[in-house]
Length: 288
Ligand SMILES: Cc1ncc(COP(=O)(O)O)c(N)n1
Image (tube, rainbow, N blue to C red; front, side, top):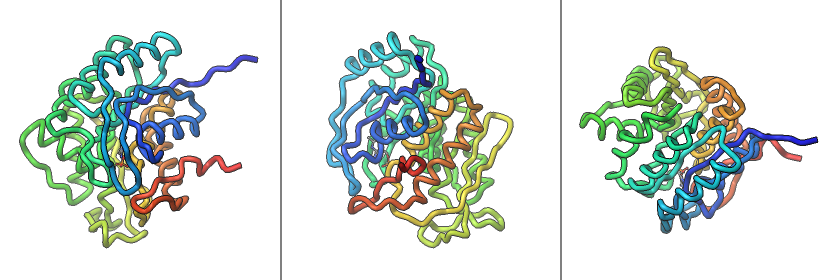
């Protein structure tokens, strides 16, 4: 009996510590029953305490890797993570257009959980000009969304409540993607009034509200806030779970809901590895 699998391509950087980047993506894609492939944009020497250095892959080589994957195996969904430079963003966009890629999930990675810059500020406008217009969904956290909006318009949006976050999601949707997922993990909210609680003061009674906006409807997905420092790679994991679900032909909203549930379970599993911001457990559903 022959078999096929939904095919998912991750275009991202490698994380030597295995919690984020390409390594997190492949674990997540595999845990979702999909076939994972890579376009590696750069190597990081990294662990749970920080990024020691980044060794970029030449965009011309990345283009060859993308050609190799698209012309042979084929791709049902793509996620992009750390793109490292303006030239890489341009190469990736060129290839995704050339092969008419669909189901494109763009995680606009800029700064790691540990505080390292993973994309120069000067390259951020490349997201707006090139990648957002072809994205099925973008998945910024609130800080990334505020920064993208500032680069696009020169103005700030302060986010202190769910209503502010909804406005930010709407403004980002105007920048071109079909869907925006604005992640609320860094903005725990009270359940009465939905206003901001300082992350340090948050309790498990507070909620995280992730917002999906498609240009007309807001879908608010609430999860209990989990108090932990071990969140390394959550963004990478979420975006590759979404891409996997899109490859499995789920609707965008259902793909996001399942991905949030998967990441929530992976954080709640309470894996303890490393001395800093440890990774989440990508295999929490698959213990043998
Ligand atoms: C190669 C690579 N890609 C992405 C991230 C962001 O992940 P996080 O914000 O969880 O550190 C990272 N640290 N390293």
